[in-house]
Structure formats: C-alpha cells, structure tokens
Amino acid sequence: NAGVTQTPKFQVLKTGQSMTLQCAQDMNHEYMSWYRQDPGMGLRLIHYSVGAGITDQGEVPNGYNVSRSTTEDFPLRLLSAAPSQTSVYFCASSPPVGGYTFGSGTRLTVV
Amino acid sequence: EDKVVQSPLSLVVHEGDTVTLNCSYEVTNFRSLLWYKQEKKAPTFLFMLTSSGIEKKSGRLSSILDKKELSSILNITATQTGDSAIYLCAVGGPNDMRFGAGTRLTVKP
Image 1: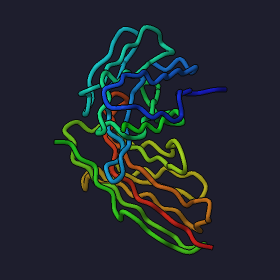
Image 2: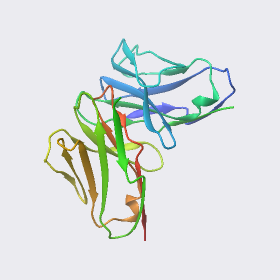
Image 3: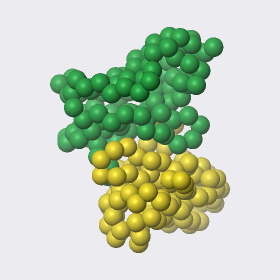
Image 4: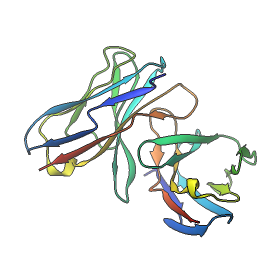
C-alpha cells in the first residue's frame, strides 16, 4: 500500500551540481506531476505526464527535465542547480478523474 | 493568466468553533475544483467539486461550489486541534492543476 514514493527526503546541493529526484507510484495512475512549493506561493506545476512516453511542461519548467519510460516512474532532473531552486518538491499521481495522491516531498537546499 | 485566490491567508480559532474558508478562481477552462489538507508533509485530498450547488460532505467538513460566483467554500464545524493545517484549493484537471496559496488554520484548545 505504498502509494507515491519519493526519494530522497532531504538534499543539499552546491550551485551547478545536478541531481535526480525519484518518484514511483504503484496505483497504475496515468497522470503524474511534479510540483514545487515555496512559502506564500502555493504549489506550482513543473512538469507533468499523461502516460508512459508522454511528458509536457507546466508553469515553471526551466532548469528541470523529466522522462516517463514506465507507468510507475517519473524522475525529475535538475540540470545545474541554482539557489532559486531551493524548495520543497512534491511528486503526485492521479487517475483521469479525482484528486492527486502526493509523495511525502523532498526538501532541497541549493547553496 | 489563470489564478486561484484563497482567503483568509491565516485563521486562529478555538476548539468547537465553526470556520469557513474561501476560494475564488479565474481560469480559462474550468473542469473541477479540489480541496486538500496539508499538515506537516504532503497534501491529502479532501473533496472534488464539479457541479454548482451540490454539497460534498465528510464528517465535520463540507464544501460547495458556486460556478456563477467562481468560488467555493470549505466549512469545518466543531473544530478540533487536529484540524490545524494548511487548506489548499486547486482548480483544473490532472495535468494542469493550479493551486492557491492556502489558508493556514490554527485551532487552539
């Protein structure tokens, strides 16, 4: 009964480093999304996927890449970390109709 | 540009009080409005509303959508300290959900 599993929970990066945030879901959901949450700004959509092999940009995609090779996995890559990417990142999945199930989040600090 | 605005930004009440949280939206293509509760970690889904005037209810929580006024309210009756959380409103579909900034509710004993 795992739902959406995100790793790591915490990460500190130096400016310019790259990393991948992992996300996996076991509910066979078609839709998966990545959001970032910053104080006072709510959740903002970075990238989303409507199925394996299909991804698209959300509201704040710059500096991030995604891929969806399987229904279960939807990793988020930071190409060259910047202090502006310090945030809490959430992965979410959903069926075509209904609410998101969110992962537990990754708190990322870029120094 | 699509936007979702929640009010108030924060609210402090005492146990037993009833609270009403507001969400208004301006979006080009409305499909659904959803409410989430966020405690320490990830948001958890509460309600999805698609039709005006139909109340969704779960225990002490209820919500209703007014498409004419482009708004929704979330009511919590007989509040408990466990209701303390950030309540998020979101509008859209599964690939373009736009969230409001949230209402931080604090329930004091």
